[in-house]
Length: 332
Image (cartoon, rainbow, N blue to C red):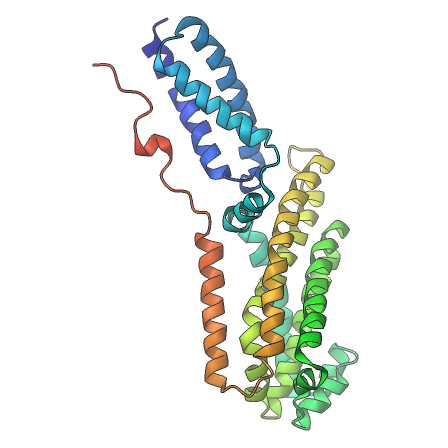
C-alpha cells in the first residue's frame, strides 16, 4: 500500500480526532460522553496507524504528523499535573465556559424551575399579601417590613460591610451547594431548592409591588441579583445533571453515568464560587449604598453583559490546525 492511499483512507478519522482535541482544550469535561468515547476510540486507532506508518513509511511526513497527533491525544487523556497557576487559568478561561455551554439545557431547566414558582408567588401575593405567608411560612416579617416601608438591608451597613460581605458569600455559596448536592436525590431536592428560592423572591416582589415598595426593593436587588441568580441557575443545572444521570443513564451503567455527570457538575460548581464572591461584594458594598437607582441598574447591566460574554464566548475554539493549513499536500 502506498502512503497516499493510506492517508486517503485514514484522513477523516485523523481530522476528527484533531477536532475533538481542539474542542477538549484544557479538559475532557468540555466534551460530551459520546465524544469522550469517540476520542478514546480514535486515539487507539491513531496509535495503531502510527505503528503502521513507522513500519511502512518511516521517512514520510505522515509519520511525523501521526506522531504529533498521538502525542496530543496522550496528553489530553493522560494529562499530568502542570503548573498550578496555569491549570487554574486554563480552567477559568476555557474549561468552565465550555462546560457551561455543553450543559446549558440543564441551566435553562433550573431557570424555569425557579421562574415559574416565582411568577405564581408574585401574582398570588400581589392579589392578597396574607397568602404570601401561607406560601412561604416565616415570610410574615419580610412582608411586614415591606408594608411598613422598612429597608431592612440597611442593617448591612450597620453590621459592618466586610463582615456582612463574608456572611453573604457564605450564604450564597450554601444555596448553590445545596442546589448542586440535591442532584443525588434524583434531582428532587434540587427542584425544591430552586422552587423555594423562586417562591421567596416572588412573595417579596409581590408584596413590594402591592405596597408601592418595588422601587426600593429592586434598587437593592438589581445590582447583585444578575450574577447571584445566574449562579444559582448554573448550580441548580449541575444538580439536575446528577439527577438525570441517575434517572436516564443511557447506554452507560448508572454508576458510570453518575461519575461522568459528577465531573462536569463539580467543574460548574467550582466555576461558580468566584462569581458568588463577586456577587457578595456587590451585595455588601453597592446594593445597600445610597447610590442612585440608575447607577445600580448600570452595574446590573454591565455585570450581566460581562457574565454572558464570558460564558458564551470564553474558550471558543479558533480554527483547527486542519483548517489553517492542509494536513498533507495532495499528490498531483
